[in-house]
Image (cartoon, rainbow, N blue to C red; front, side, top):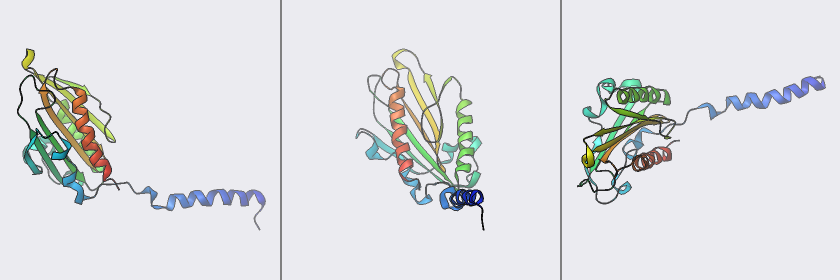
Length: 197
């Protein structure tokens, strides 16, 4: 027969042991079947934008550090590119690229995000940004040109569960802002978040 103190200890330990045995320890992921839905779609953007590429990730999208298509348990990648006509008076972005890669698990996505961030850090004349996106994120701002013809580009890379995502967008300084670029990234991140299971 258990003494009252040992009985109390047994009553306290058993529920905690059962919690550890449940399925709660499995990491949440995005299924591979959702890959094509993880990038910005036409209806996420104003009607002035037209798609000029929507499909599997191209070799030019990955860069030299991420050349291996099977890196870190990668399941595939998807890209969407949009553009519109514009001038230095045009408000908002002129060109947008939205990309996503899926991995077997979040660990693979973490390693891929490290490569994405490293490639952005290696670009010339950049200003580092730390946006609040997904589980981890990094970004940069770049400027080219001068005066009213200066073009500003924003690039954000982030991870959510077992996916990495990226937004690259540009427009004219004073007409396209960091807030505009972050709004695009948050729309894409909402897509990723909606498919995490």
